Image (cartoon, rainbow, N blue to C red):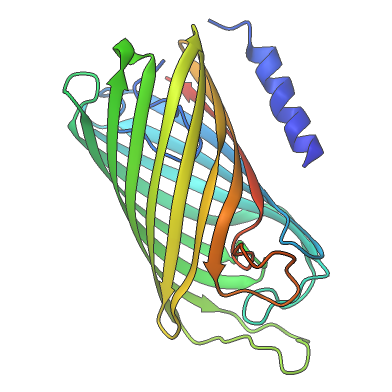
Amino acid sequence: MKNLIRLILSAIILLFSQAGTADENLLGYIKGAETLPTGSWEIYQVLTSRSNKGTGAYGALDSKTEFEYGVTDSFSASAALKMLKLETSGISVDGYLPKDNSLSMRPSGFEFGAKYNFLSPAKDDIGLSAYFSFESSWIDKHSGQDKDTYTTELLLIVQKYFLEGELVWATNFGLESTYAKRHPVQDLPANFEWSTEPEMELGLGLGTGLSYRIVPKWFLGAEALYETEFETSVGQERWSYFAGPSIHYASQDWWATLTWFGQIVGGGEQFDEQDSKELHLIEKTKEEVRFKVGFNF
């Protein structure tokens, strides 16, 4: 975690002296409504550190390398490779975390996405876009065990510029559906629950954020996200609220965003060893740090 933060800060300092684009990410978790211009490319690198489950030791680093192309001024398509690094010890949760695990950084899945812009926030009173994605993964991001997962997401994006673009507001409404099937795990503790039957899950999300330009090229922001998930056999399985600050820097050819996200409150399924009963710490952690950088072509 400390090494990741040092790396991010060093990158920002080194890039400070450089001199936005339509689809630059002002916030870490909340998407904007803009799409890329026709024929343009953008490459994104996203690193997300997830840590602290309230007991034992838990740390995960998600990597997403994404290529986006402006098919038309209103339609963008993207493809991404996802990777995962995970270290967990001293935590055992029925159905979720079977045993200690250590994974070096490795490919874990891929994702395809498409965004269509109905109203441009730069040209109309308010911006409106729809985003659709399909993801396939073969490693469980929580436990690091083998798990086949197929997820589709539909996102409605609203964005508004204020003060001639100095203040930007964005809100996302999301619907996610997931099919998942765990692989068997050898040498499990006695009486440990680890179902290999297929599961169907439905997730809902609502997020909003503000970003304000404090000086040329630099934005300070804040964002919040509510997520809940319903599973076939248990109904509402979990819910959580995350919120935190963001800082964004943009030059002509590249941009970078750093976000700290802390879990404010959560509920649903819990485990006995977690130190807070006001949080959901089975599939979520107490905090996340996300760094995003994009390059335009």
